[in-house]
Image (tube, rainbow, N blue to C red; front, top):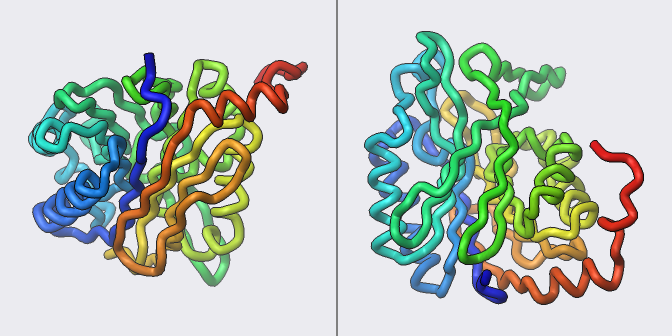
Length: 272
């Protein structure tokens, strides 16, 4: 039986190219979240390392590996469910890596991993040009994992623009969907909150979305504004313009009430 009410935390950081410093920072914020009562702590996308694209293959690790071992120990020490936003995972290729989200339980067990499916290849004139597919390989599995806190669906950043993924996660039982991100400023200012609230409303789920903040080593400005959104689409917590932790209550009884009173998920006529 899932815990019906608990606190969840989203960690907002500005990660750089010093992996040790990044991991120390992430750990400090996770410990803060646990001190404040959080039972689920969610880190942002690429929280452990961001740097030149041509170094990604050298930085990437296997999973399990040294970084996941440290995160597993952290989850054990804090007795929390820890969602490691995303890490660069060796993909068996000599050129590309996976961008992988991992879930650890309070015993430090790796419950699930999700490899980001949608790669951010964009060219917004005058703002940002990014081609993730140059160095990264997309995953092809949908991952919803049962935990003591409920069923958690895993997504990463650009996945947010593909509603069929979220509907399939909900069909697989997801009550909470995580969106660890490094959302760029121009697209974030236009679409971040709108899309997060839409995914929560459409699927009647909690959405936990920790974002990177500040300027990345590649010179891209990230939007921040990490959010936790309830199944009615109401923002419960929002990060300020700095590195920090936000916390909100997840209430699965309320989720059930929303789904019971407005049973749109039972009215679906066209399957994704």
